[in-house]
Amino acid sequence: MRQLHWFQTDLRLADNPALSSAQGADSLLCIYLMPKPRPWCNLTGLGPQRDRFLRESLQELKEQLQALGQDLMVLEGSPELVLPNIVDRFSIDHVTTSFTPGWYEKQAITFLEQKLPATLSVFRGSTLFDAEQFPFEMADLPDTFSPFRRKVEKLNISSPLAAPGTLPPPPSAQFDAIPRAAASPHPGLPLPGGSTGGLRRLDQFLFHTHAIADYKQTRNDLDGLSGSSTLSPWLAGGALSARTVAHAIFRYEREHVANDSTYWLYFELLWREFFHWRAVIDRQTLFRQGGRSGRRLLTTFEPRHFARWCAGDTDYPLVNALMRQLVATGWMSNRGRQIAASCLINELGLDWRYGAAFFEQQLIDYDVGSNYGNWQYIAGVGSDPRGGRQFNLAKQAAQYDPDDTFTLKWEGFRPTQPEHVVDGADWPITDQS
Ligand SMILES: Cc1cc2nc3c(=O)[nH]c(=O)nc-3n(C[C@H](O)[C@H](O)[C@H](O)COP(=O)(O)OP(=O)(O)OC[C@H]3O[C@@H](n4cnc5c(N)ncnc54)[C@H](O)[C@@H]3O)c2cc1C
Image (tube, rainbow, N blue to C red; front, side, top):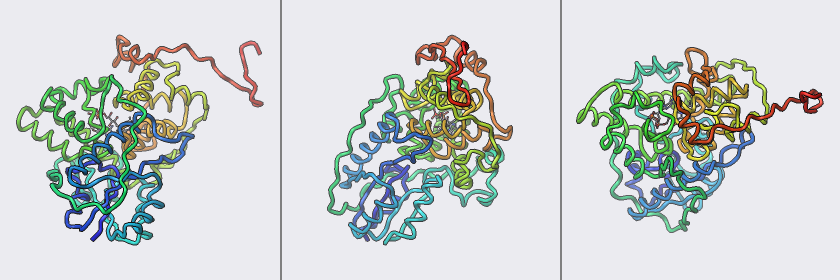
């Protein structure tokens, strides 16, 4: 049997059920299709850090496959166009891939199931649990996090699979080098793509520095490595599986200490899990302004407000610093994301989807369920039982950056912007007029 594995958000050898299933094949072609985000909210392409992290992840995966006599073919183009072509060209009998919860990805799978001249198997593996383990039908997935957590947190999490020791050989084909990214990791947050960096960070956060033991107190720090685990980029791209992280937490609890903080890291993985399964159920409503409820929101699209928010040039210094950190490093803390999102929605009055699209472009940990689910939550059209969050920006700055250390570091103090107000005929209205 000639098999093809299409890597998506499973850029790893270990704990990759789809890849492990290829062991009995006669040949195996491994491919990856560079994501081409939809031209959505006038944003196109990947931000420099997202592009960099992805290319590093692919490069390491390619080298790991080469060590097993395999290789990775990286191509451009949509799955609907590229895959039927490749399947035909290499006379592939069976295609495997990993499941991703996004609606557009699901559409591509449905299309391929009908059009591919080969069988297609979609494997789970990026979550803690399989849907079959849930004590409820998927259609009854709780709307909000807490009931979901209570129902699932004690379920068994199966042990991660070992990386395959051998893989079938690739067919005769040209495997080009992966072009290097234009950006380098930011020295302030040097997170390298690839599973080696992810495993190193996991080991460092848990067993080396024991930072996990105070995580509940430090997780709201704005600056990354000193506060939270920063494991999200490897989890999102699949260089680390969620089961690997969960089992590392459980081992830490057995060997060192089990406290509120160690539990809280697991609790956050449950949030990731929740947004993953909600994305499956919410389908295209995840991208609608009113979410699954269809609630109407009053927004005003003022392009300058959006441009200033993206560039970190608003009248809110902490928000500016956060946005500058995002563009420079591709990462922002959870607290920071909540503050920046609340500013876009509540202070600037913009449609939350513009903010979500900018995050999608820039974040090295972009994950469809977590990104759009969290944005909907803050906009009050998602899973927030309180119906949305408005953060008092001055209070947040006083609590999380009392000495302006973070704001100064990321140059958040900017000259105040002039108000641009126009009349009905688009003429500027000034104080003199
Ligand atoms: C507006 C907004 C957009 C977001 N977009 C994304 C995104 O695209 N990708 C993404 O992975 N996370 C997203 N998050 C969730 C969260 O901010 C990040 O997962 C977290 O900041 C990553 O840093 P960390 O790995 O140090 O997290 P830690 O605090 O160390 O948490 C450990 C892991 O738990 C998961 N997690 C933590 N908080 C959340 C959460 N609120 N929702 C879902 N999972 C969580 C992540 O996988 C994270 O790596 C978003 C949050 C907001 C408010």
